[in-house]
Length: 98
Image (cartoon, rainbow, N blue to C red; front, side, top):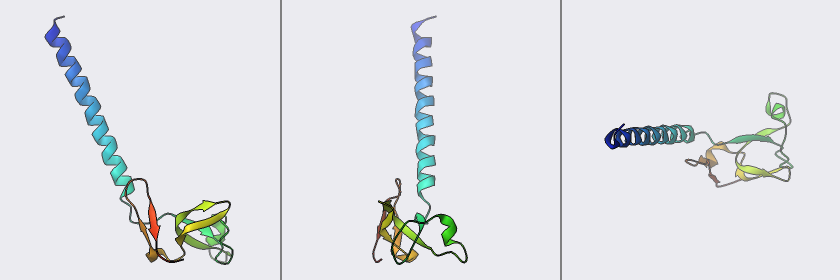
């Protein structure tokens, strides 16, 4: 085996690794491109995070968009879906209203 064939193998494996990284990046961008904000079920009066069954017909909850859950309460989002926008990769949300 000579040096030139070893170098060609290294270059091919590097190209495969770079190609794989490009595919991973494209997948992440595609997953983050959803225009729907995160939603969770919560009580409108207490802001308690509820089981998703409570947001079904006849349940006591409503969907809360964006934000996060802290100490069992929803915060940083809104019950108004149109007031919340979805961020890019990482899904950071912002809101205006509550």
